[in-house]
Length: 450
Ligand code: MG
Picture (cartoon, rainbow, N blue to C red):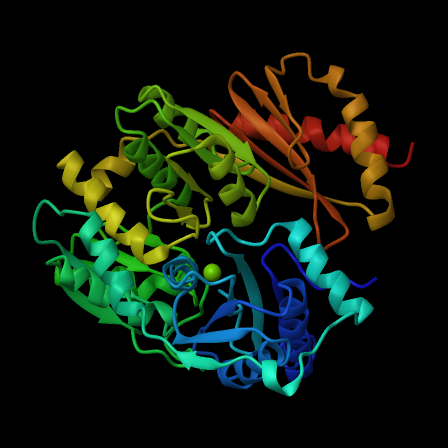
């Protein structure tokens, strides 16, 4: 059986992996899985291929007997919100997130607004490849209607927060789906908003969709020149948030995640969830608030599932995919932006002051070439040699192997897509980070061909 789903739904280049036929078949496979009834919410980002793919997806769903509630262009978090608000059986988002404009894809949510787990994705895949699909007769074909939920989403989030004062914010939505939400939401909360690239445009003329420092130079300089308190950027489907401090510097992702985790724990001793590749600065910040950090596999699907399991107060990845379970279990960029302002208000400090007060832990990233068929064996042999790391305080096996030391950690993890085993290490200083990395790489190379 082939493989359709990756770490974030089905994704690829339009006309190659992502075709109208694929969308039609996936719509019908989902309808079959849902028992040929119920309603499905469909949203899309503004890519030039989104209308074409949406039409086919909807046809597939209708032919399988599901009703369709079309949201039109909407950020990913709004799809998750709409599934619950409208009592739908599932939600579908047509997006390729931060990938370039020639890409597109699709992501699935269940009726509780939780992203499809790998098990559920496998079910859809099995139906798709086995062609065990079921169409309905002419009198049971589904109905399609357009629903407007952007306003209720904005109202619900705005009602959940109170900002301490009027903030000046610059927002760069990268011409993605966030353009329809974040500027309106922040204005509703009383902010003075300057927008960049905040009209949806499937050619994404403003900047690269990945909210990386190279792509955010304009945002950084506008934040400084207008004297804003904060700059905000999203990826194409706005399930991620990246911040720029008032000095025009892109906030280091791990530090911002740590600040938010501590803010959400507050005085409540709660649990926060993050991934095995996140810096230990989050442990420092959360421990100070007597909270606890739980680490999961990489990917927002794993983070959401762990939040639910541990009843966590917050979960996030260093990429800026943050989940606030008191609102919903979907990574939410606009909500993240609002929460950063709330955090600034409760601290009474500038973002630069909060970030600069945190320790700087150097990171080293290496990759060791390893043929795909040797990855599993090499990881087993590596695990058998853990006694070569006598100073290990804790071993985590949720995604690859993560060894934690008193003064650093190393993550050894096979790449899902390339013939490499990746080694990421962090130390209290760069010499220690390098030392841990070299040790792990040395053991890996020794066991790989033994
Ligand atoms: Mg995204």
